[in-house]
Image 1 (tube, rainbow, N blue to C red):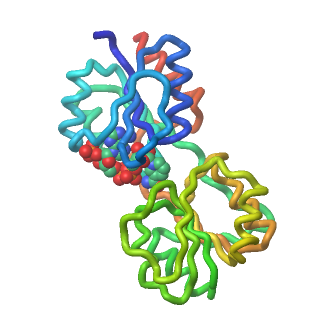
Image 2 (image 1 turned 90 degrees about the vertical axis):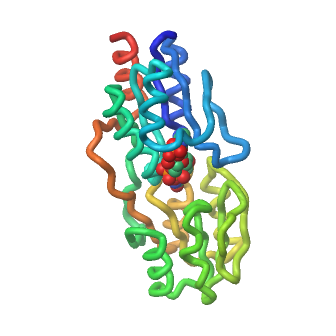
Length: 248
Ligand code: NAP
């Protein structure tokens, strides 16, 4: 079996990396968690579902003759990254983290940084927000379930499976989003505050520009801490690294 590069995916960057490596003739296998029922699939070989923890992932890397791993998972996906770090070390396989830069506030932005979703719920209460656009994904929504003071427009890719606040509407949608669309959504629902994770990237940043235009406060959840792993910010850098690993 020829040595392949494993891309831990679930992001646009992971798909772009798979395409670049495939074009360059580097054999890749992309891995998805299987959370989304109709995922956007990368080109090349794809496997779907958890590995069963770090030890199982370490064994899988050896069995599959994986030459190198690029962890291109979402900035808020902590467990798979921790698992990859342990598995790569135990299997003696090189690991690189590809993580897009976070968002940076500009002039006219009113951002409140918080550490997690419960803190975001607290910030909304302090702001006195009444109608909130919640774009933090369907995991962790329970943090807002006890909030009967506000109405929430909950936008996520799949139907949430947890307790939700008493007054809400779920909007199933997936980016990329446009500035016009985000503006129209804010206006139509008379939104007065936005909650987001610091996901970074261009595909979902239009909401931040729309919030700036409408002078809305934005509660931004900080990225969780990560282990110290060699990290690049761009797909091009990750592709260059993976090509070198595959040929070496
Ligand atoms: P997580 O908490 O870090 O991972 C939970 C478990 O799911 C992991 O322990 C692993 O199971 C499995 N898993 C996660 N990503 C995987 C992958 N790419 N391939 C194979 N197994 C994977 O992750 P999460 O926050 O639930 O996110 C799941 C996926 O959605 C990630 O791949 C991420 O890139 C994508 N995503 C996440 C967010 C977010 O806000 N968290 C947003 C957009 C996309 P085992 O321990 O059994 O191996």
